[in-house]
Every structure is written in structure tokens, then in C-alpha cells.
Length: 192
Image (cartoon, rainbow, N blue to C red; front, side):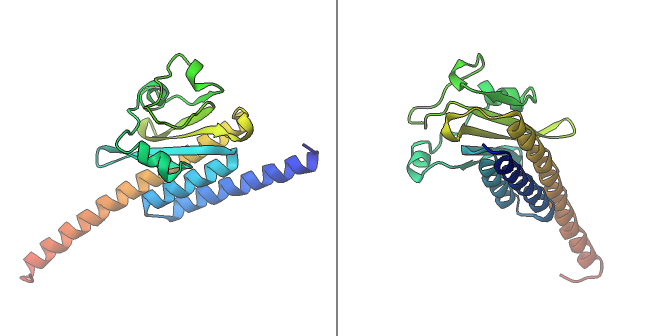
């Protein structure tokens, strides 16, 4: 790759990263924000697939990206269990970047009918030391390995996601408290 082409690619990736961070700071519809970040992370790294998992009301939710409708239908009800490589991110808060998923000692395999995946890059979404989710990408274009630059970008996105998730949770608590206060005020002044 020529020097000027590399510079253009790096500038485009920096712009995409900035767009992702800005969108996270402006939004309140968490699922759509995370979906957008997943799409941008796929574009930035050349990944075929992305998965964002986050906790909402004590439940792990998943946003899969890059899979066809047929691939998603075959996996319906077979969400990741959070063991193996995902366990390293969920439980031990590790960033994982590997060239061959199956060769990793913590690999737990895939459910039947799962799309083939080899390369992997994932990061925990941490707010302080509290895990709020994970973001991971698989199958870099051309069978290439994810780079340290890709890892830095994904870690940055994961940090921005943590702030967005925390902000949305606090906003929901404030809305609920506001409803309570309005109800108390209405009762106090005799309005129903």
C-alpha cells in the first residue's frame, strides 16, 4: 500500500472513530447507538461480523451485525453463553485479539449451524471496574489478522460505549424519579 493511500485510510478511520464517539455522546436510544457503533467498528477494522452485548435490567442483550437473515434464523435462541473467549472479556475484563479462534486454549466452540469464524478481536465495555458489556469482531477481510491499530480503535469504542450505557441508565433513573415526584406533587395538591 502506498504511503498516501495508508494516510487516507488512517484519516478515514480516525474520522469514523470520532463519529462513533460523538454519536455515543448525543444519543439516548441505546440499542440504535450501539448498533451504529457496531457498524462503524466493522467498517473501521474490515470485520465481517460484529456482536455487541450489554446488560439492561440485569439481562444480557445481544446486537449481532453482519450475519444474513438465514444465519440469524439458524441461531435463533442460541445466544452466546459468555464462556470461553467471551468469558475472558465478561469475567476477567481482558481484551482478546487472536488469529485462530479454534487454537486458543479458552475457545469454547460454536453452536451447530454457526457461520465459520477464525479471526477475533474483542474488548470489555467497562465503566470504572464495572462490566457493562462486550464488543467483539470476527473475520477480518481477506483472512487477515486484526492489527494493534484495530485493537486500539475497538478499545476506544468500548470505552465510549461504557459512558453511553452509563448515561442512558442514569437518564432512565432520572425519568423514573421524575414520574414519582410528579405523582407525589399531584397527590399533595389534590390533583389526580
